[in-house]
Length: 166
Image (spheres, rainbow, N blue to C red):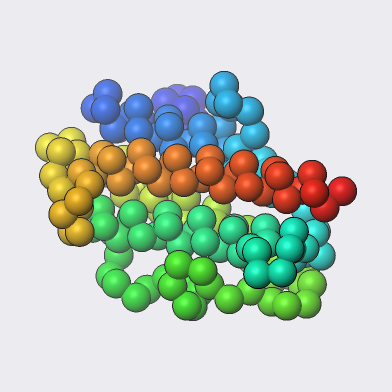
């Protein structure tokens, strides 16, 4: 069995959502660079560079993306509130000085949260796709699709920051 086939859930809608998540994160997609691809090769120093005072840097965008993967997974029923590995919520604090080991750990955190989100989506009962998330605003399918769009949005920001930096 291929790696791609082993990711399949059996339901076409779930499979499509998994493909959308993966194309935004680390699989080939028509749009170009993925979130994981945008981070490839960046040093801790580069990840901390700010385009202007008060603006987010790449490192902050990375842990922010990890947080939202965690949040959607939690909304799908995959983890308790308050269990994200970093604090504070939404925009977790990052080092102010370059720390290559900490940067690698935060990239691994992002990758790990993506994997856990994929597992939650893959095992989601298809009937739940139309159910409203706990906030009662978006359906589960919209939450999943939205977190993929969130990855792409921040990928664009990261690519722009990299251009400005150089």
